Image (cartoon, rainbow, N blue to C red; front, side, top):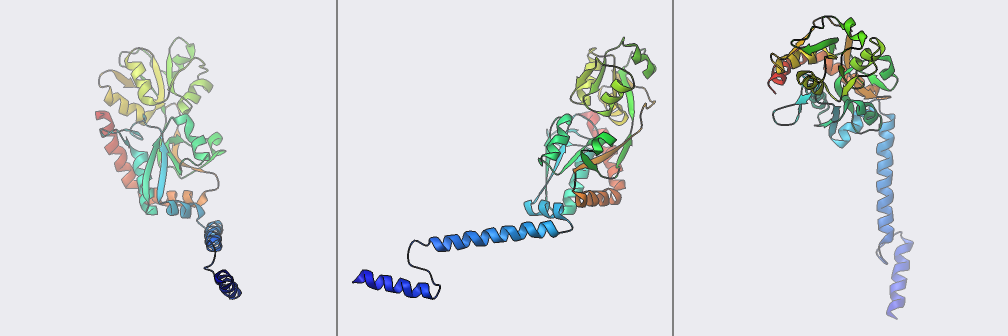
Length: 284
């Protein structure tokens, strides 16, 4: 008899769209549907927003910059063992503009573009030279620094001109996949290069007698001359002219626009960062 009354109560409640009898599965289903609808609405809002990339970064609460330390003063490991340098500072400026936390991922230079394309980070800040080939894979911000390739040599080297390297008599070291590497191969015709993952390792090879010359960015080379005081020298003549920019995944125009705004508004601060890190890197 009690079971019949229970069934009648449930039937009555169901007539009025009420729940309470049974296991509560209907409530869970409705909650799941509501959550799914909310997620869909959020995704839809981002899709129709004029700043979908910025919205996504703000939603996760973290801006992630990817870099490749070992290229002072742009990126190197500070006294605390953490990435430091001009690019790291510029990334912090962008994170501050977004109002989110800041994260830096350190990896090999030749992994950066693919890591960006796969979504492991939001931006590359690694003293990356703007080239037509790279522009096919990523979008670049405005230039924030200019540089060029020079020769870094042991202090007692008799090499006086880059043309001497074409003879093939010298062991030349470069940072792999950089414009210095490309220049040495395509312009100097060198195929048997001593490739390292960063400029610091190239300088170490010179100082230890494992290489005769390095083709490196002039700013990094000047910093390394200070670090290896009395062991290395740099030929002042630049063999290339290059523009450095931050790199963003294709289609993220809103992030490029925000980065350009930060670069334009902080030119003096970026120049000051360069000066400070040139001094700091030479002491590491």
